Image (cartoon, rainbow, N blue to C red):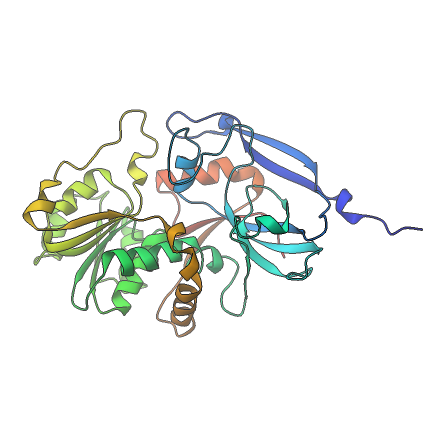
Length: 348
């Protein structure tokens, strides 16, 4: 008797983009589908999704139009990076039980042919270096964004004043800690006293401005009396404008994201105070983390060392269940998450 094919008994539950959102996305923008998990052909692997990274950039991927990456098509499984476990392998590079990182999509299973390994950014992860959620945070795309955005684009020097918005979020928490390790003075901007207290008392920031409580510009004047040398911007909008009024000569502004603008139904608000760049001979530069893919191992090794010796901490906000994806994603834009937002799909 031939052995039973266990793969056909696995059901793959998926979340697909049903329509392009106008403003904030809602549950009606998604369809929930299921189909049998696909049997891997020669050279392919079948991966079970364990946890997915929820990131502000996902909102941009839902929009039609030219960007640094093609939009998610209507009816397509929503794009997402994640950590999974190999269930079945017909490829010599991987064996059943291996943990992997890659673009898995918002679904329970992914069958990946060998010729798509690189395109999906697939690589093995080692839990001796970090937990599954840390591989989606400090050791994952947020950590890579923080590392290359700060060091390559921001180019901080010891003694510089570094300001980071979204300081308690996935990218911001790593930017601030890394800047401290590199000898900088660090001021965060975050929403709520609890987040500000955490980045100062737990992560070691020198100060944090609660944008929900008062005047950001006044806070910058108080905490950055000599000006801002590096600004790592995750939010755009009014906060970017406020920081531009405080930059010093030769400042570097890293444009990582603009979460305050992603759900706009009108034109994106551009910086009003951009002439400060001219006056201060400053530079504003955008960065996309995928441009640094060939150097990820260098960043992972350095950041893993900081995690191991206690100089860096990693906080994740974990939501359980694939069915809760729409509401979990919404937390990013309401400020409801505290730390890196992760969707737990299954246990290893």
